[in-house]
Image 1 (cartoon, rainbow, N blue to C red):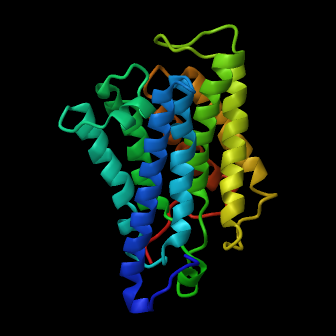
Image 2: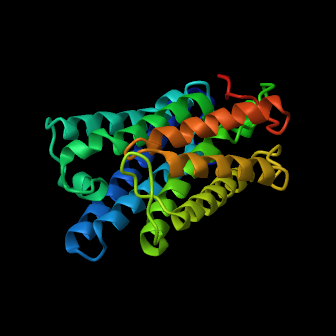
Amino acid sequence: MVLNAFSENLAWLWDLIAMVIATVALLLIVKINGRIQKSGKLPTYITRKIIHIVVAPIFLLSWFLYTGSWFSRFIAMIVPLAFVGQFVAIGTGLMKDEDSVRSMSRTGDPKELLQGTLYYSIIILIVTVVWFYISPSALAYSTLKGNPAAFVIIGCLAGGDGFADIIGRKYGKKKFGIGGGQKSFAGALGMFVGSFIFSWGLVAIFSIEVDNFDLIYLMLPIAIISLVATIVELLSPPHIDNITIPVSVIIVIVILFYTGLWPFDLISFFT
């Protein structure tokens, strides 16, 4: 949203260019990560979590490239929608992509991409449609204010859940969980810290352009959201935390909204 090189009537063209840039960047991350995993330099669980941690935040950062027009979110949503289609195709055997399978599956079975990886992409798709970042130029002719919901949802899903697994595997001694889940208090700490840092960090980055993101005030609601997301992750059965975490974050945001602790609209309206 700061690099639009075209006139206003060609905003759609610039948004298409932004979409292509975002797609290429994410595909490069997956490909490079897959080659690293194949080389044996990093264990599979690390390469999986690298994808989990970085892909969604990088996609959110690509929102800076869009013009903020009413159609921007629909062009931006093509990126996660394409990944949803790709993962369904790979998981059902209609398409082969060894780098994606190596990067995002535990066992090398393509069908794994129909579980957590697919849910992850669907959540990003929903977040894009409902809470797409609106540029200051769009705010000039709208009563809408900036909304940090997307950054908090993705912060907990990507940073929190990603670090929960890495820290839990390395430092978690006593394992427990529901339905065979392997959780630990060390992993829970990683979840809370990762959720808070990533959520607050993404909000801080976008606050460069959005005046109503009070970083000090938002520390409390983000901490509350991160704590609830941590508890939910700790209690989630295997393979569904990519659903339970963002759903719990959305529920807490709604509760905070009605208690006055979330000073933003519940959704980003179309402009």
